[in-house]
Image (cartoon, rainbow, N blue to C red; front, side, top):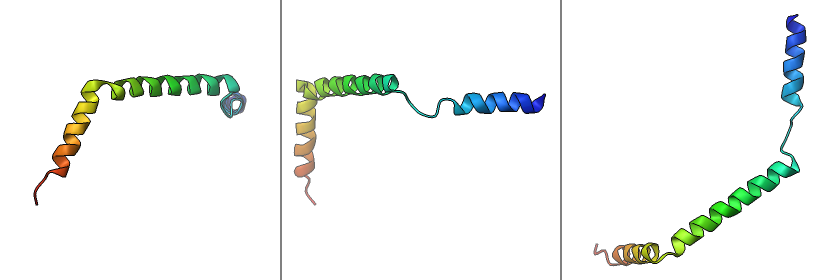
Length: 63
């Protein structure tokens, strides 16, 4: 009985060794959408001015 259950679990676990083409496509689309959102956020005026201010402050530090 135990051997039969173990064989079923092992077969089910080994049946899906990797991602299929559809899973790769969904992952690629999700990554591209995330990149587009990040690009839109970074491209905004508030972020650009904050980064410029941060860089200016870092470069004007007196040692």
